[in-house]
Image (tube, each protein chain N blue to C red):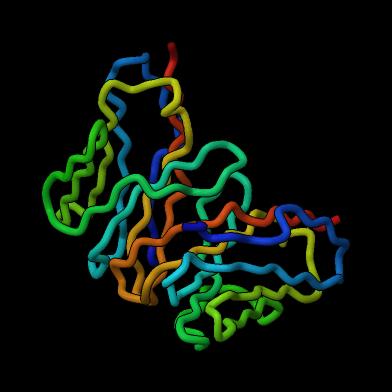
Length: 110
Length: 114
């Protein structure tokens, strides 16, 4: 059973701090990894994707991938209350599908 | 350009009934996937269609079926509804079926089975 594991949280950080979200995956064959943000009652929104080991930065977001450890993370710098949402980690599956974790709920306190 | 559109947005059914959910992908995208998201869980893969053919199927019973039309829109059908089918049903589109494709989700159909 191919799985993606995330800490469900909630993760609470003060405004302006760095939020660190982590996930691990079981399928060593996965080559692509995605982070989606989902506000309550809304659909997932793609915010980052990463295919190679190392870091990838986009604005306040940095995705990190370590294939040897089967570990993916998302850092959010200068966290804002508007970043409060559930963050879903997903790994690319063999059928062109995505395998999602359960999500980590992030709360940014003003 | 319009994003992924889904209809209806909300639906209430009773056990044993069937339901049809509809999805139109982003213009130019040929692949449509369906996911089920139960409250508090991540989306679970149901089907992927590309060029009107099923390219992938998740671990769902045969009560779930889907099809894709020549204009790349898609329908998801669920027969003999159970209480456990209550969930947010998400449609996602992508240009193709590669394993590194980025999926873009519609706003979903919230199905409640009573």
